[in-house]
Image (cartoon, rainbow, N blue to C red; front, top):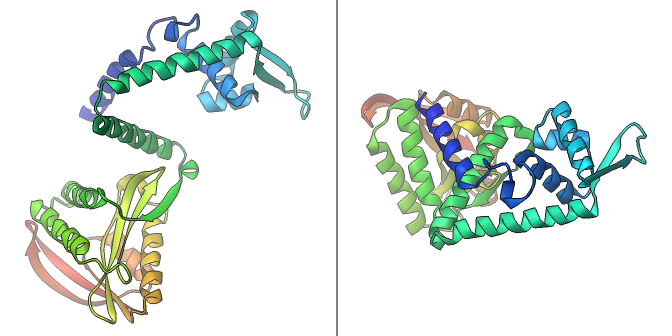
Length: 304
């Protein structure tokens, strides 16, 4: 329930901040819903009501009433589709085109003014937070439309890796800050001693937002070590973990390593399943107490 109230509070704040509550949205003669319809038709230049309904997530009956009102006001026009006589193609009239341009200009001006009040680093924080919200909600709505990618690390990623591991393992397993310190040490050693020819970090992204990490580091001339595999909960179930492990295996083989090893814990069932399915074998177990818990560490190996 605290999360629900937090989202509702943000919704109330943001709708007021961007001025969607007044009837004359952006100083126009349109309501917010009418302005969105005008804007989407203008952006597309032409579309069908079905496409518009899908894009705006509006009931076709409600959308039909909005379109009828806009037609009466001379902003929108419809003509029979050349491909399907049963469908109508919507477009803006010259009056509607002027309204679209005015709405676009005023929106850019208002958002520009809101951003101008913030220093450049704070603008970047705001935009990145918005990207995260958009990515998470879009992904849960339809994962197939999300863009998944792997890239090499860049400045700022090590902080994300440490923070994400510390937060995720505390929330899911209760491990204390000593685990976060361990991850920080691994990340520090990787950056300070990086051999770019034989070591690599991958950051997984969905729609530009980081959702996972994995490292290959040099243990010896013939042995590489896979480290810090993490997939955020909302990105699980897409095969991303196996894809990242396969990337590590391919890299290690290409660089001439003969063996790829890793250390994990017996309770990390999902990770163990990925390693086993990728061909790793369990070499040995060792009980230990770390991060506030009695654990069983496992050493896995893969001959390359």
